[in-house]
Length: 198
Image 1: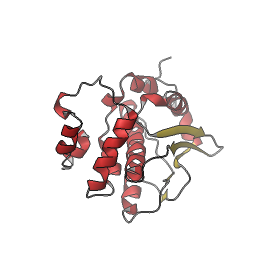
Image 2: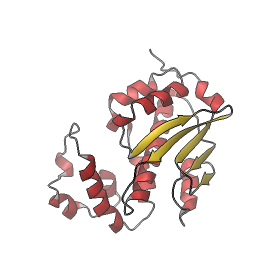
Image 3: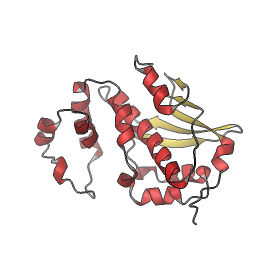
């Protein structure tokens, strides 16, 4: 919501109806998933930019994930970090289910979106994918690694803004996939994390 406000979306009247004051929210506050979906279902159709979710993902910071980040950063390598992330995915913001698909040359971190209201489906998939990508990039910048996906798949039809996706993920992007997928070279996943600490 803070990201939407920073991008110029007029969300104040809607937030007032739900008695939410962004300036007074506690970092420890919790929000019911059904309420979160109702809010997004109301906000998203009024957004002028259909790629807003993709852009919002870039603003999701490490601080919002709490101790979860320390767990990921202190894993022995990216493979174990992905396994821990999948295991503790309920500590993230996603509307869906993460799973790993190991492969000899490529391993995929996949996100199967939960059934979402059509009005906010693309927004939330974009936000969750872009936010996950941002999380992995931020962790790597803190520990001195540079592991990038070799390809990305997105589970909705190819939009007219498709080039923004390739710019965001710095690799080929395929649309209309059954699940969201970040394919990574399997050999990259064994690279030791400098901050590894059992």
